[in-house]
Length: 298
Image (cartoon, rainbow, N blue to C red; front, side, top):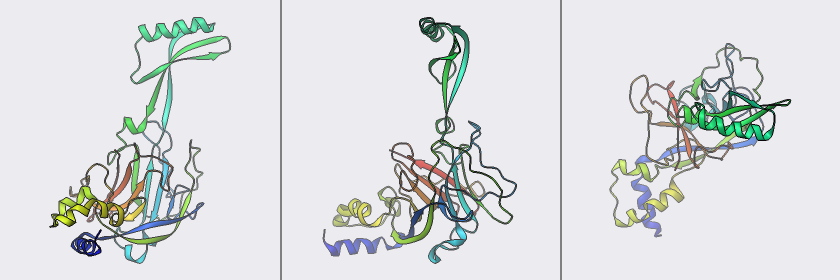
């Protein structure tokens, strides 16, 4: 690729260049107000650990960013306070008693078949099982409550997530981290690497930047390989997987088009957004207390 063409191309994109900041981490937790992945978050004195309204279980804690301790070139962009993301990853098994029971394996197998064919089935049934209590085998229907599916967890403002900015203006709550299945390991953000960032190819067309034939040919390659920053990052441009999706601010109804933080599948958090997707915490530029989380996948 001709160096001159690349430099001309970058110059044309200079108007959409933004700074982004890649987190530098070390294993372990930090203070309650520290920027971190997982670990122990700040909760105000009158708060309890956020619970999912669908399964009534504690949500996973994904991320905390202290907005007052950002690099100099990122300060005052996102306001003040502590940005947090909690998200429910629970899949809960629920058993419905059919009222049928047997005393032998053979009898119970026949009752399972009878129950499936003749009894009203609960919504979302996943199967039929036998729960043995001593010599009695009780026939039960099994339903899995998947909070992400039930509450459209990929959508902004879903009830199975909590994205917010809190102000640590009072003493913190005294609490223990809930016992969660597959609790994420804590990673402390100790520094940031400043990088230039540009929109990915799904958004670049919106800016109507005039490109000649040579520049059109290198558009995808140079954006993906050299200019657009994927992975976990603070600020910059969203790495859209499907299409640009900026939710409307609940206060002013304008697009929440300021990326605060991007969470890539299995980067610093061992979690996959759908099929190798990407999560985005977005903010209203005018009403900085308004933040939203959504994710996209292929």
